[in-house]
Length: 494
Figure (cartoon, rainbow, N blue to C red):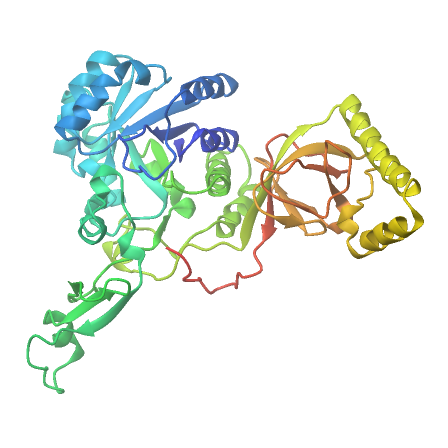
């Protein structure tokens, strides 16, 4: 089975490929259902072309899955020459109006039916095949039994199914709540995730109060119960409860990593991970986990070797998980509360290892810095020197020590993504190493320009990390989130 990972920007595309995806899907500005993702524009096609060369054999899918208005069709036609720069292997679409345009101008690209089209039966798949589609991304409401029936009926058609990530509470993601509450249409890529906001449950007072003897079930089925979003008082959503479900809003996350064998037997050709708006850390770890699980399924590694990587899925932001509709719709009907949560924060990325000559230059700069400071102190009036020395004692960051050479240690450029204090325990993540722990004495932060040892790193500051650990280029560095509590999903943020 193909492993298909999300890529909301060029960096995420690189990490999707690095951490084991066979293919990745991107969106182009204005024509994707994830407008808030960075998406791809301007001259980024040059970087995408370079990545395709760096990772030969990897596929690139492009989501053009919005419902097009006339003006958007016109805009797409006006930008055709630009889009042709991208090395796109397949387009993912729901709107049939765009199909003849793609077939004419991108004859070598495959066509994939988006899950937004709600294709869920063999006759629909046959129709799409006649229209020239090579693959269908089945609606998430399809069971594995139905997947098997569809594959048996149309064996030539590739079947793609979501295997992991957030699920929309609306039918095949076609939600109207966002547009109703915020004016941001999910079908144009502006979903505001209103289903995950905080709501109060109350009773409308338009009708006489219900008799106290009425059962809770009758109340739930009466239409009297409503939801009110806390920041929008006076706007009500009615709640209805059926015989075997409660009103649904925030769905659980899909997780099928323990059931890949069943998906394969059902005829799934491609496993899709949701998350173009998720972080680089999410893309990397989830892709890595599914890569290892697939490798174990294919006999390339043992189940024991794959197990710790699969377990690491709990280390990325997630809600409670479900198998969705694959086995029973009862599983999909169960909702959850709270924001996605993770016990870790992404701290930074490892850059290139400095050459021997570059390291020597850093050490020399440090010595020069210390010598210049001593020289300046020596030339001061005694009173001024005493004041400066007192200031240094009270504020040691003003007189940093110089980085000195250590046998067996290497210096790497470091891209800080969050403020991290020196001495914080770091965990280095790579495609094939679960984690490498760097304790306080295992590394030093330094400024590669002046050779100074620095007490913390910040984004956009010049930084390097000095350590005895051998770390590959672009490895991710994470730190533990002190606010995380196991078993408790925080409800902060939206």
